[in-house]
Amino acid sequence: MAINYDIRVAGNAIEIMENTWLSIGTRLISSYNWNERIQIGRNCDIGPCVLIQTGTHKIGSEDRRAGRGKCLPITIGDGKWIGARATILGGANIGKGCVIGAGSLVLPGDYPENSLLVGVPAKVKRILE
Image 1 (cartoon, rainbow, N blue to C red):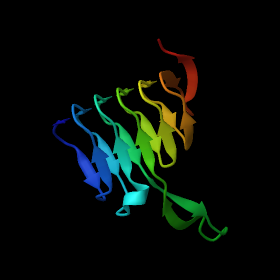
Image 2 (cartoon, one colour):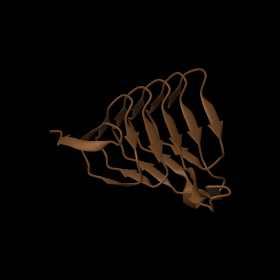
Image 3 (tube, helix red, strand yellow):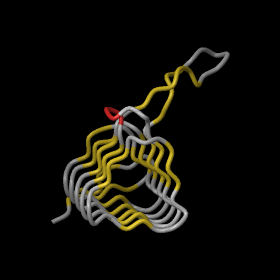
Image 4 (cartoon, rainbow, N blue to C red):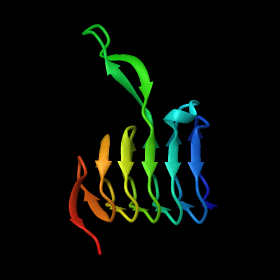
């Protein structure tokens, strides 16, 4: 694993496999509960200023819409390339061999292997060979 400078980590439920690159400004925000962890596979390249966070809130009353906090796990499969300033939210399960375009927002859900994900919110643009 190669970690560049200016990486910020909050929480300790993070698993990063071998030969993965974290670029400048990467932010990993996880739970302290291993069942709600960030799991990043082998041979991944994570671009500058990528945000990966498990935390969110239930919708609260009109007095305070950010209700009770909760965390959802994130799985990032092997061989991933994540472009600069992409954001991956809790509950995302991204198959191996995917490319996530720069600036994309990956919402909770299952994303197939070898897909190109782009946009806000990120959608499967095509399947890669």
